[in-house]
Amino acid sequence: MTSPFDPLGATVSEWEDLAGSWSLPRYRGRQIFDALHRKGDRDYGLVRELPGGLRERLASDVPLFLPSIARRDPSSDGSVKYGLRLADGALIEAVFMPGTRSFSEANEFEDARAHPGAAPALRARPFAGAAAPLAKFTICLSSQTGCAVDCAFCVTGRLGAGRNLTAGEILGQLYAVLDDAGRSFDGLRIVFMGMGEPFLNPDGVSRALDLLFERVSPRRVTVSTSGITPAFARFASRERRPNLAVSINAADSETRSRLMPITRTHPLEGVVAAMRAWPLESHRRMTAEYVLIAGVNDSPENAGRLTRLLAGLRVKVNVIPLNEDPVYLPGWKRPSEDAIDRFAARLSAGGLPVTVRRSRGPDANAACGQLKGRTEDPRRTRG
Ligand code: SF4
Image 1 (cartoon, rainbow, N blue to C red):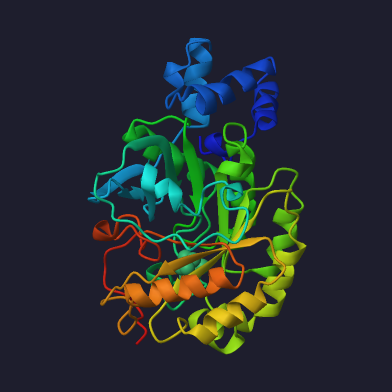
Image 2: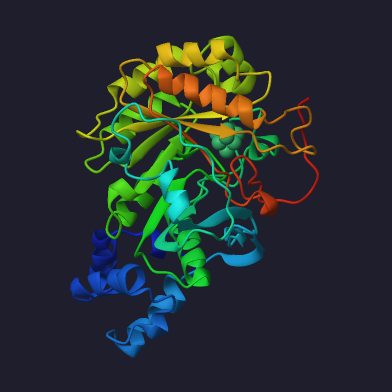
């Protein structure tokens, strides 16, 4: 039987309701939920505390499906980019990023309390296996099978819109990577910075967050948005909120519209107002992401404007030097290391905590803006 019930995306109470509708004690629902999300059983046949007949009925009526690994592209820095095949054949991408001591110093996903004030700009460091691996690691998840937002610097955006992932597909994506990496939830950080705009999939992402927060502190989960202003209120009103990252990329509307056409429908002023309205716990900061592109948004004037735009916000700026892609992003260049340093130093001098992201997995095309889920030629390019 085909069922709309989403086993990996169902809450405890939905499992209990299902058990009740099958004339079973409601505690059976909790048992199944715990087996899937706490014990890590990926097959009902492994849930030994359930009667055999129930295990068979579950397999038949609400079958489990985990994305299959279609591609596994390891990078020299230890990151692994996964191509994951969903039940309908769609291909999405997720990235496993191991923690290292040097990475943790410049990791924008760390607890923002690590940078409570105007910290000096943190310079990207070489990957070189010099640093001892830490237990912590980050998994970057996709929320859609493509992206309609069409940011000029993003490979995913070149491929156009996709469908929303269900909460079960988002959890399945995480479990597929965890299983393959041989890791548990210990040390796990999650970032929704893969394919898609999480705020355009508020139902799937919000439900996935509810399920994730059963196992992971909200402080270990970051949702990144391009600034879909109507969705801020929904996520802000959650009882348990993830960290917020907002992709800013330019401090004036003209440049931002060029980089992010969505600025025309969601103006920059509204995005910053939504950031100011975001309820931050004490000692927390949100992140403003800034993809740095040579000759486009990397001048001292750009840095000055950004400092003024974000004044008064408890925000940390994460500078992300562009990952060049001559096929998908012809004409866009990464600034020189000196230009990157100068830009970051200027922000820092203006009182903004700032980090410079070390791209994870550039040789596997696993770095920011390089997730595309498909391998065919781009439909659209931007010069
Ligand atoms: S950067 Fe994010 S929001 Fe923009 S096109 Fe890429 S995936 Fe979509």
